[in-house]
Each structure stands twice: as C-alpha cells, then as structure tokens.
Length: 112
Length: 111
Image (cartoon, rainbow over all chains, first blue to last red; front, side, top):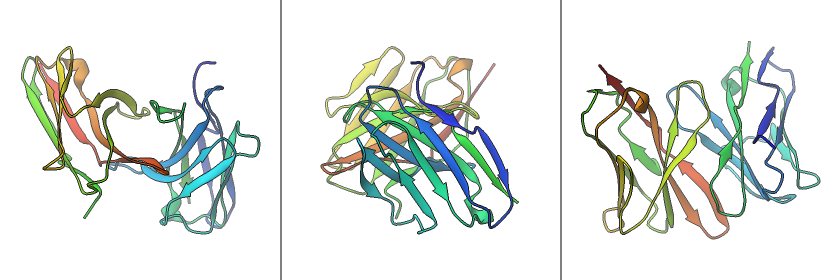
C-alpha cells in the first residue's frame, strides 16, 4: 500500500453536471476525511468518517454535496449540479484513530 | 474571526537565516496542535506535533502557549528546501475530531 489514492486527479466539467470523486485510504486506517482547498487558502474541512459512519459534516457544505463510505474502506464524494464556485482541489486524508493524517494528491475540479 | 489565523506571508529569507511563524486559534477547548508543510501543488504533510512543553526536531522548534492560544514554529539555518507553505493545524478533540487548518504561511528561502 503506497498511501492514499484519489481518482480522478483532474476533472473538467460544465456547470450543472454531476461529478464523483473516489478516495482509497491506507488500508488499516479507520478514519477518512474530505477537505477542499482553493488557491492561497488552507484545506477547508468538508466531512469525515470513522469506519462507515459519517460523524461530522461541515455546515458550509450545501446539500449538493454527499459523501459515502459504504464498507468502511473507500469513499466517494459526489457534487450535484456543479457551480463555478465548486472549482477547487478536493483532498482526501486518512488516519488511524487520532493519529497523523495522510493526504492523497487530490482531485482538481474545474467547473466551466 | 477565523478559527485558526496565520500571517499568509510570503516570508522571503536568505539561506541560513532564522525565521519564525506564528498562529493563533480561537477555540480554547482545542486539544492537539500541529504544523503541516505543503509544497507547491502537493498535498500537505505532517511536519511536527506541538506540545505544551515545546518540542524540537532538528532545525525546527515548535511552541504552544495555551493561555494566549498561540502556536509558533521556528526554523533555524534555513535551507532552500525549506521553501514551502507552513500550515498551522488544530484539533478540537472529542467527537469533533476534525483538524482545522490555517491559511498557511508561505516561506521562500533564497540564495
């Protein structure tokens, strides 16, 4: 296992389309996090899972965003009816309990 | 007020210089503190945890002042390879186990 992997690495879509990102965490890690990062800003928390349970979701996250981790392993983040303001880097991270977060390389979304 | 505040910089320093970054956090219930490093167009990586007693890792020293809700990072003898963005990170603990990141402070070390 070489670390957290995310797919796709880049996605260009038209406004109004739906997009889905996938994250495969480090295999023994029980916690999985989604963050969003825009240029010049730090990562902004979106949501996190402990095993398959979604324990927290940012109040900033509109109902167009949904995340799942059905078997406590990989996770998906779906954005419906994308808007230009959704353009960002979507980062996934995993950890073993409250240990160090290991980030994937991110999925860059561009909404035209 | 942002939960975690940092001076975005950039800090431009010559090789060999000592540079210090500061960070303040607003939630007094915060329990764990970290510095992460992010290279351009790369993902963040843990640099070091920050403890109340202060801790040192080679050229890097981190300090925490809980009373002032203030965290610092000192880099001695700066190297060109230290050029990156340094992110101050806070965990509130309990069920709210997310990490909250500051905007980051950009450091550019020059010859």
